[in-house]
Image 1 (spheres, rainbow, N blue to C red):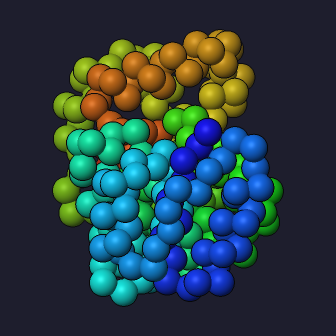
Image 2 (image 1 turned 180 degrees about the vertical axis):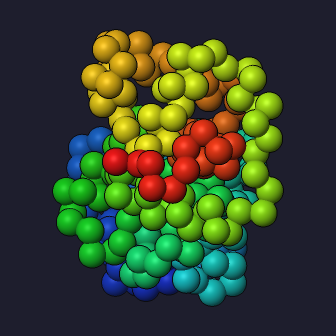
Length: 221
């Protein structure tokens, strides 16, 4: 079962999400709340696999709550999907910086929300190439401390190629097609890169690819 925490200050939104998610045989909503502080407390108590996190909430917004949850060593397996009505670049960029594994607007189709929960739970990131371009364009403007190029010295030349393609928003199957390798080999490369560079998930790999200069805005897609 995928254990889910819903954090949104609108009761009706929470009820709708709960009804949708609890109807799935592989999902269980273990808690819900309407403030950022409560989201942090409930995450520590219930240890959900996935948190659906609104951005604008009282008593600690969703971005702050995301940072606090993902900084907790006891919640290393928890993934956060940011949900908002505000599809603005600064929020997307800040959500990525906070460590979120996905970003969805609240009018997303139900089937897409369910897919997002499963994708993120499986350890992948929810980043389409178009969203990746927007995120990284915003990060390029906002970034104040780029990752030193020497950080990439820990990976092989082939792994650099894979990292560049991850930064462009390609999934494992697309990377495999581009490099004439199997999807399993692509997945293995991505896992090894994450371990060597000590990043939490694929989203953070995308950030590193841009902030190290390996990929630049305008290259993706």
